[in-house]
Amino acid sequence: MSRVPLSDEETRVIFAGEAAAGFAELDASQQEDVIRRLLNIVTSEAPPSSFVYERIANLDIITVGDQGRLYTKVVDEIPRGDTEYHVIFLFFIDPYHDYPHKALAEYSPSAEAKAEEVTEIEEVADVDEYLESHNALDEDDLRGLLP
Image 1 (cartoon, helix red, strand yellow):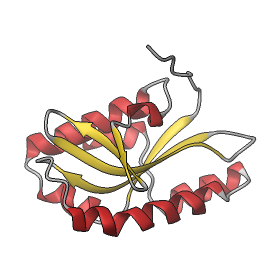
Image 2 (cartoon, helix red, strand yellow):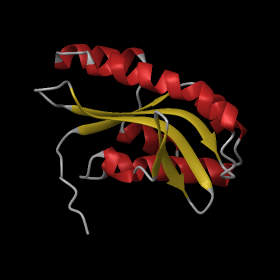
Image 3 (cartoon, rainbow, N blue to C red):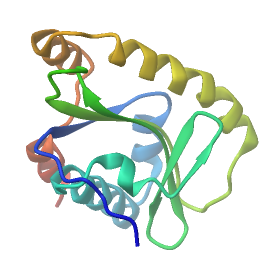
Image 4 (cartoon, one colour):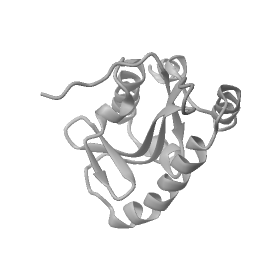
């Protein structure tokens, strides 16, 4: 069994790509499953990268239930040297574990670009501004989405 380092950083979730539209298309129980999974990750002491089930190209795949998959890019420990945050960019929600190859090809370069953009930020205040401008969700925001 491998050890997972614990962290005090705060994890935020940014709905990117088609994630918001895909979330709206899910039925109520599927939406709740996604929010509960994200809330579990956000409230964990382990960094979000420890929840990645598999990687395909530049995408980090996180499971939801038995079949669901979240196509994400997880970025731990930003800004570098003065870590305050972890960020999960959520690109696509696949409730049926279909692995649409078109979505993989489309989101992989975008995932890499998002990771590069956020890791270039050097000051905590700039990360705060970035997260606010991208409507990043924190624990309270996610709890507010639950019924």
